[in-house]
Length: 349
Image (cartoon, rainbow, N blue to C red; front, side, top):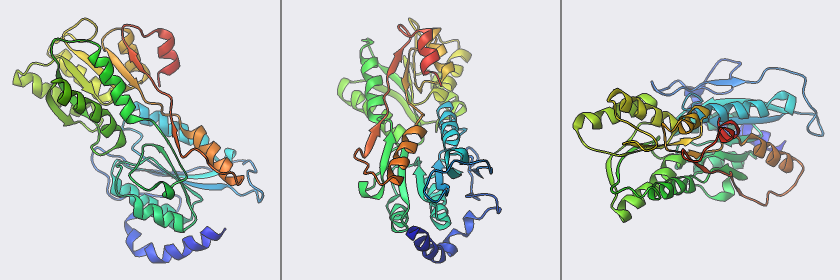
């Protein structure tokens, strides 16, 4: 294909800047700089009997850049969904790179461009900083599809975006909290990785409510999606003697860490108790906490985007036009007072 000749030209131009990305011969992308709380690994699919998905019977080569699959139950489910879809049996040659750091993801993207992938699939760690590398991909004839998270880049630089409406997730949660009609709102706000679309969306609605409705943010800190860090933050507030009645955690793992601190201090939480506990992602174990009324609210974030991406690739390969640039996943919020076992079974991840 034309883009592969262009990719070869890019390879020569980029090789000096990509020495930090080198890996063994059987890895597609790697990083030499992984933070203590961040895992970046790479892998390629094994050889298998494959489906003939193109006129020439060639595999479609995809480079998939995702966040650390150990980040949360949501991310684990998301990564598993991608790996189940992008297999040789389904007509793909897939390579994976992981990082919670934007600069490492960009380096991985440059490596995939050098390798001449057909498609670059991206779940960005941060919304900013992607224009240049996506322009390089476009110049090389590589199609870019965003999944899970949006970025601040011109729409002409990518084919489609399959995402959750993070701002809507945050607004749905805040509307639910307003509906609890508390006499006062004193909130511990546990944020995700700063700059990510999920953090920005889930934070924005709460910040607006605090400013407009007089809610108090007792503390507002990032725990980077991590349960242990969340527990430390909540423990610090408890130790300070500051009163609070709401935990607003931007994912289930941080809510779990917050509850561990509450339990250690014998502070009642859940339905009809002293502290309202809110999370996001709808891990099955988290929805069970709602069912048992130990938590109060959980916002859904749908991790299953692979089938949508596969459909878009098939349309592009068939020469069809992608009419819908942004595809928003259908999501809802769950209340401990109304959730059922059927909800847990259907929506838990």
